[in-house]
Length: 315
Image (cartoon, rainbow, N blue to C red; front, side, top):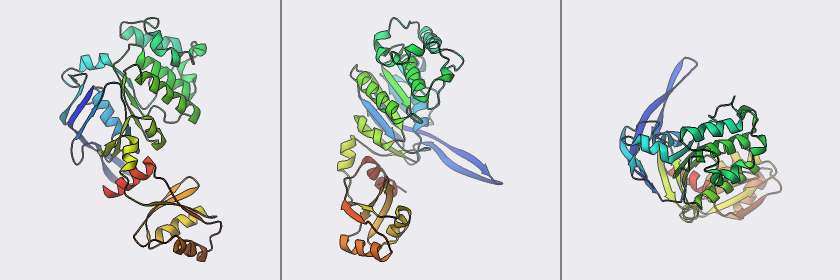
């Protein structure tokens, strides 16, 4: 459904600060062009931090930004040459809420249906699971909705013309955990209707809801696989460490000679280790530093662990 071949878009973002001009690479395909496929009826997640290039990629796929080189096609149509057709078959949600805030919920939905020569009634079955949750507030202005309700309205507007492809750019940013779960449950139901979904997020925990994911860093994909496949490829031995002073122990763990890397994970630190590592030696090291309530145990890697390891390899 989506074919991308050697896609590149390079530019530099300038950040003038205190008299200095700091330029930083932005875009996609910094080292090599992006190439990937997304199958029909698949949820394909692009996972990465802010500034990784996710929005640039999605704007190209939505025919809103021209690539420097390479090609991208949706349903066999080139996003540059056939942009008029592409815009008819996609539903696009940009990262920032972009509906008309002075219009009501119902007025926004009616407007987008009219743009695509359809009506709310004609495609109501497609959006009813989503829209029914905000329909009681259909006369409320969009600007007065909560974050979760705004996203449900935006998704309803993106779906009202029955698109073949949904392009969702960080749709759950700033949304509460309950609304995030509900949103992803909706995406699962849409996938079951053979709608192809490509979605970006900075939340690593959302990766498990995708069929496949691409880990993105500095404009390039550093891994593409199923979430479990990404985890299965993890090569390090991972341990979790807890102590009474977590901020201090983070610093001391990074200084310890047998620790390769250390990152904070909630109420624990995840460490990767060098050959010859001893749990007892680490426990004694932390005890001598004055830490108490020390717990050291093996940990199961997550997608976030894998991303951090791959990011270090690609620096």
